[in-house]
Image (cartoon, rainbow, N blue to C red; front, side):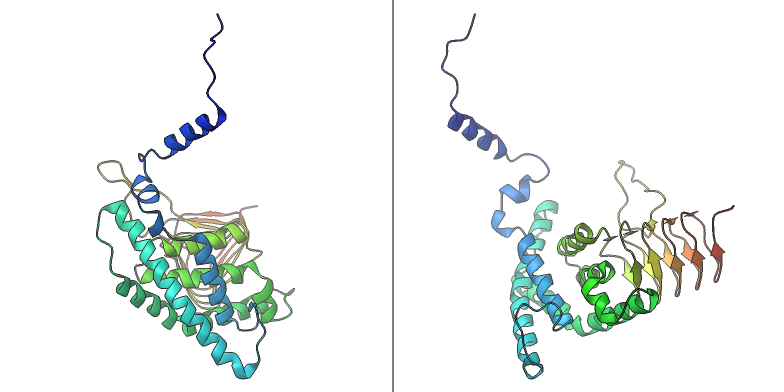
Length: 297
C-alpha cells in the first residue's frame, strides 16, 4: 500500500544534509569545523607566491609597470606586504598542525620571525634560480635565452615554488611548504617534496611526471628528464603497523648527474658524480662515479 504521508520538502532535505555534514567526527573534525578562521588560505598563499615570483624576477611577472629608478620602491612595497600576509599564513599553519597533534601553537611573533627569515633568504633563492635558468638555457638547444626559461619552462615554475617551500620546510614551518609544493605539482606535473635538497643549476627537461621524494639530495649541475622517479624502495613500519616517519629513504645524486626519461631510482642509494642513467631503467643499488647505466639490448 502506498505511503500517504507528505514527502519531505526540498528545503527540509537540504537542511538535513547540512546537519549531517556538520557532524564533527572523522580525521578533519579538530580543524575544519572547529577553527575555520585558523585554516590556511590556498588563495592567499597563491597570491603570496605570485608576489614573490615578481620580486625574484622583476619585470617578468609584475602586474603593474615600473621604471628602473622605482625598482626599490616596488620591491620594498611587495616584501612589506608579503611579510604580514605570510606571517598570518604561517600562524594558521601552526594552528592547523597543533590542533591535529594536540600541542600548543607558537605565537604570532614567532610566526613573524619565521616569515622574516624566509624573506631574508630571497637573495640566495634568486641566485639559485638564476643558475637554474642558465642551466635550462644551456641544457636545451630549443631555448633562446635564460629569460625564455623564466617565462616559459615548467622546470623554472616548479623550482621557484620548491626553493621557497624548501626554506620554509628547513625553518620548521608545518603544512605551508607542502601546500606551496602542491601548487606547482598541480600546475606542472612535477612533484617535488619540499624536504628534498637540490643544489645549484638544476634542470628538469620536458618536466611532466617527475617525482622527487622528501629525503632526496641532489648535487650541483644535475639534469633529469620527464617521467623520472627518485623514490623510496620500501616503507618500514613501527611495531603498531604505522609507517616510520622522517628516515632517509630516497636517492642521493652527486654533482653532474644526468637521468634520462622514465628512469626509476629507488631507496637510499648514491648515484656517483658524473654518472649517466639511461631511459626506463630501474635502479636500486649504488652507481659509481662516471658510470653509464642503460638497458641491456
